[in-house]
Image 1 (tube, helix red, strand yellow):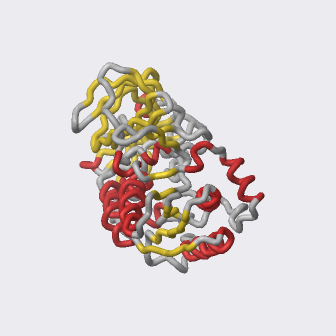
Image 2: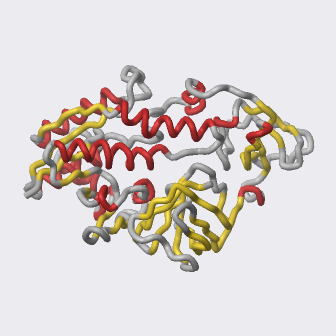
Image 3: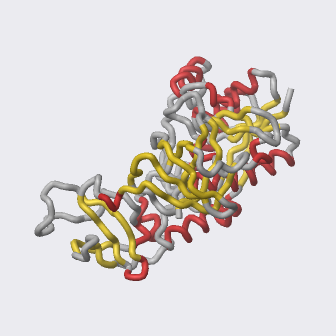
Length: 356
């Protein structure tokens, strides 16, 4: 049997992961990753409560648990990138980078130093095959599949990884947690970006990025409002624009963010969900990572340009070491620079890149 270090978040998924591995006869140790400093007493950032839940999980499962502080690594490898991207007007996905740089790098290195044979997390995804051609595949539960967030992992990172929940559905995980009386069986899933929690996103960014108001205008150049700073908006955004009662505008038709002109500090807004500026059939991505072989030019695959999006059929029209270009069978809505596009060949996650 193996020695396995499980990343325990204080939630039900990682707790059930630890239970399943212990039931299989493995020696299981739990590690709580503290990735953010300074907000321990903020009710919107429940790190303290999460660690108390991890201690309760350890008692319930009779496994050793510990806290390891990766806040310095997180600030350097994830948060600095997050701020730089928002400052440049793009919309990054810190959860993708957190997996690649913290959970499957800093945490993996720490677990190996402890003598672990494997690490395990509560991600909903599956791994098949052997090195150097191991495959990352979608989870059985399509509603919870998290392969999108794992696309930046390498063969070396997935080699020692285990995802015991990949073959289960979320209702099955909840039912098992209740059956074995886990103390977090009824705990709600966490939402949002881990270091922001439930607090207002724009207020959080204002701590770190300058407030530079400017014109909010239509593609034709008509000013219809003022924005607080381009960093605080993302393509496709509808809420929080504060546009109302604009003379000559279509009454009752919602406004959406459709673009940014960084040089002029202007936010471009349009009316209607299906406005042509919100629809794209092509995209280019860089900062690529392919888990196995790169996709073939001319072949058809499917892709997601955001988490929970339905897989969209597309063709690879270009692929080299630096960029990949895709042409979609149908227009994609609000393709957002800074977000990730992830390619799939059936159930297999090939990898992807950052949308340019």
